[in-house]
Amino acid sequence: MKNILIILLISVVSVVLSAPLEVVNDDELVNLFKNEKNVIVLFTKKDCEQCDNYENELIHLREDLVDSLNAWVVKAVNSQLVRLYNPTKEPALVFFRHGIPLLYDGPLNDELILHTFIENKEPVVRELSDDNFEHLTQASSGATTGDWFIMLRSGVRAEEKWRRGGGSLSGCRASNVLNYSTDCVDCQRLQARWEAVGAKLKSRLNVARINRQTSGAVTARRLEIRDVPTFVLLRQGKLYRYNIPKYDVGSFAAFATDWYKNARAEPIPVPKSPLRRLNEAAKQLTSKQRHVNNGRPVINKSVRACSGASD
Image (cartoon, rainbow, N blue to C red; front, side, top):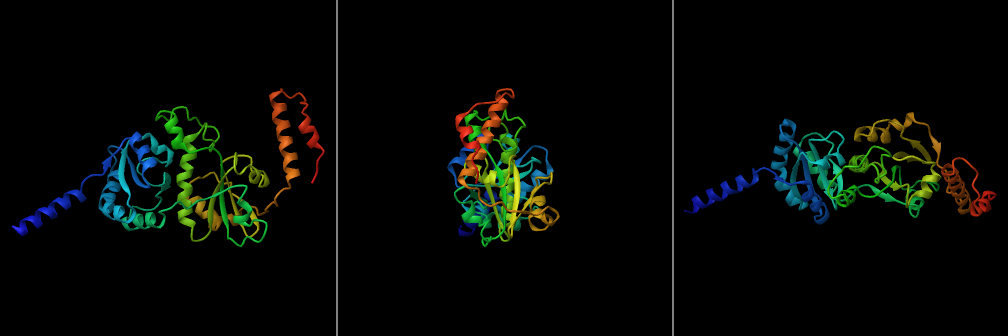
C-alpha cells in the first residue's frame, strides 16, 4: 500500500511539472505586473515551433524559477503587449521585476536562462537626474565611479498608458521614439532591451537612463542632447555618442566595450552656471514663441532681461 501511494505521488508530481504554462490575457498580465514582484512571461503565438521549444524549456525550468525567484511563470498567446518589449515579437522571454522588464537576449539554454534571471533579480539600470548626475558619474571630477553608458529618454511608463487607454495600444503612432505620449510602443521596447544591456555589462560599467524632459533637462542641455532616444558613453573624461542605427542588445554592448574607439571622443562639458542655464532657457523660449508667432519678433520682458546675461 505504501509503495502504491509513493508511485501515485510521483505520478501526480510528474504531471504537475510537465503541465503546460498557464495562459493569461493582456489584462491579467498587466494586473500581475501591478501586484506581483516577479513575473516571467513567455510571449508566444500559435503554430510557432520556436515558441514551443521555448515553452518546453520553461516547463523544465519552472520549479527552479519558482523556488529561486518566487516568480509567476506564465505565457501570453498573440498578445498586443509583446510589441512593448521585443521588436522581433514572438517568441519573447521577459522577466518583470516590480513591473520593470528585462528581455532575455541569450540562446535557448536552461542553465543560462536561470543564471541570467537569478543574477538580475533587481533592475540593473540606474536612474539619473540633474540632482545626482554629477555626484554619481563624477563626469567632471575624475570619473572614479567608472564608465557610464546612458540613455536619454522622455515620458512615463507604457503600462500606465495601457491602463489609461482601456487596454488598447491604438493611437501610439510613430513619432518621437521615446516620447510616451505619442509613441509608447517603441519607448517600452527600448526599456526592456536597455535592461538587457545593463545585465550584460554590469560587471564592466554602469548603465543608466535619464529623463530629458523632466528630471534630467539641465543635464541634457549640458550634454547638448536635443533628440530622444540618445545614447552616450562617458569614459575616462571623454564623451562618445552612439550614432549607429541599430538598437539591439548586441550592438549596444559592442559599442560600450570596444566599438566606441571608432567614434569621436569629445570632452565632457562642465556643468553650466545657473545664470547661463537661465539665459539658454530664455533663448529657447524666444525661439518657440517666434515659431508660434509665424516668425514675427516676440516681445517678452523676462526674455529681454536675460538676453544680455553672460557667465
